[in-house]
Image 1 (cartoon, helix red, strand yellow):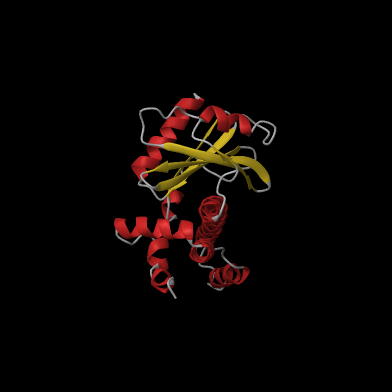
Image 2 (image 1 turned 120 degrees about the vertical axis):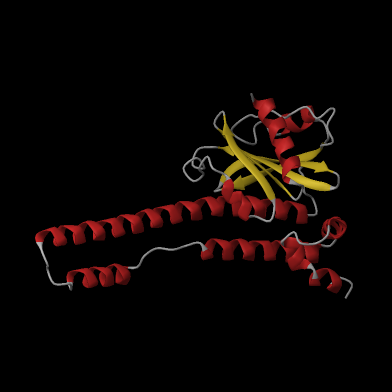
Length: 250
C-alpha cells in the first residue's frame, strides 16, 4: 500500500524524531490521509496512557504492614529507642503520604495535558478542522458569542508570521470552550480557552510537566480563563503566540 512507508515512520513522527523536512512532509500527508491521521491519533493516545500509568505509585497496605512488623519485632532496648522508632516510622508514613498525594496531583495534571494534546491531534485529523473559517479576528471572535459562557480577546497578528485559520467549539471535562487554529510556516498551533473553574484545582502554576508531551505547550490562567497553546512548532514560537494572547488579554 502507498501508506506503508508512512506507517513505518509513525512512531518516530509522534516522538518528534524525524528530520524537519520529513516532519513537514508527514504533516502534509496526515492532512490528506484519514487512515494515517487516525493511526497517529491512536498512537498518541496510547503513549499518553502509558506515560500516565507509568507515573502512578502508591504504597500498598501490605508494604505498610511489613514495615510495621519489622519495627515492632525488634526488642525494646530502651524508652528512648522506642521513641526514636516511633518517630522514624511516622516519618516513613508521612513521606509515603506525601509521595502518594504528589503522585495523584501529577496524574491529574498529566491527564489534562494529555486530553489537550489529544484534542489538538483530533482537530488536525478532522476533515473539517474549523467551524468558522476566517483570518479576521473580528469575524472569528463574534462567532463564539452565545455558544460558550465567556468572552475572550484575540491578538492582532499584523507584523507577525502567524495566520489565523479559524475556530471551533470544543469541550474539556464536559465544559465548553474555544479552540483557535493558527498556522506558522506550515505548522498548525491550537489555542484552547476554557473557564478556569475546576481546572485550577488540577493544574499547578508549574507547567514543567508539559515537557513530557510530544508537542510544545504553554498554559496559564488570567481573568478566570485558562489558556493552552500547543503545537509541533518550536518552543520559542509557541511562547511568541502565548505572549501575543497575554498582551491581548491584559
